[in-house]
Length: 549
Image 1 (cartoon, one colour):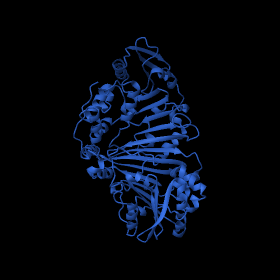
Image 2 (cartoon, helix red, strand yellow):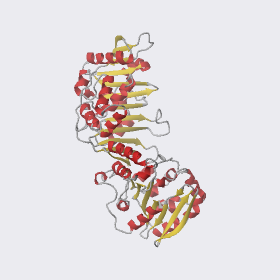
Image 3 (cartoon, helix red, strand yellow):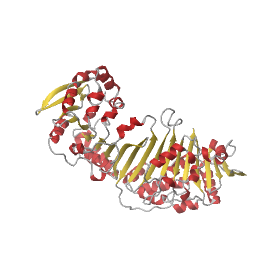
């Protein structure tokens, strides 16, 4: 049975579902956000959300209800389908947010958009467009009585507008409040924040989100369609002082992808962003193993990573390198060309009988579960070989042993540590540096590098991801699923046959999740990131039944 829905969960639900608007339409560009909504959201808020248009919620929600993963999650809540689950939630809310007509019948003007600001603690305020003030008042009066137990209604008029509050009998403060403004907008809040509604109604434009300069600049840099944006100001809340001025997120939802983009003005010098200038090509990706489900590419200049490598390798390795007097920049980074690539594949002999692995490398060897390949092209092969020969002397400093061996005429360095095999490495005569684990993967990678490059593991439908980005990460969920399904029953330990069958059913229920893609780049003096969930939805087979309030 669904739990009682309070006003703040209702607001969040509205924000999330409304973010699914405009599916299949020409989404609005950066200039389309409703200034009327932003006009009443304070710049001092710890976070704010602005939705461009609530207009086509029905189409979007109905489409997402057809995802197999949505029905799978609904069944975990004892509902036969996602459509039935969402319909039940809509009945709790009192308005079917999937339907434009239902929104209008409730007194909401969908095309005016919506906004929400989180003021700190449990206080929040939202702004929505008004189509019919009397209907909207009736909608929230019904909600207040049935869900909040607020049966006492009070209405007052002032210069700020018409304030309607709903209170529980004997309560010291209203449970819910609506302040109807000019320009067909209404401010809504609950609990202690209701008393702030007149203050927000009188907010000057300069102190509102509509005049936030960092947000405005970020929205101009974030090109492409969007359905909503989120603003997190620096210096308070989630972004403490001394980090960034603020982060802006924009979201765009399509039939086959849900994409979130982020923009943050870079607080350091512009030169420190030089590592994110794409320079290299993707030629090395053709030698990555075809069974890789995870691929990462770095097309920036490795020489610009001098300040970043300690964060990438960890404190123990950093200390060992520094104590040995090994100069990572001159010995390694300055001698690498842009275009490094990395791949992970599911280990063919993985044993999942003991459950998920501990992520602590000191306790669990990751190469029992995945195979690793990293490829890089060096500038000077002789200098690179001289640097590699120094690594065995460094290894004891971070608890490892590195031994030089001969692999079919190729000099290689094999690494081991307390938990087993580490990452092995070698340098080919063409100056290509290979880092791989386990040993069998190093050997197969060296054999592949002796042949012409192949098509690589990235599927055709994902090759366009991050063409202009310095860092690109691809997680191919379909290939990972296929690899797990192909594992023998023995990989699941005792009772493996039954466990595998259950796992395969779960994977089949989520096979419309295609991939997760991420990219990192720079634009002007800002850092930008993009993450996208790619989908392969099945054709619609159900119709949406409007929920009865």
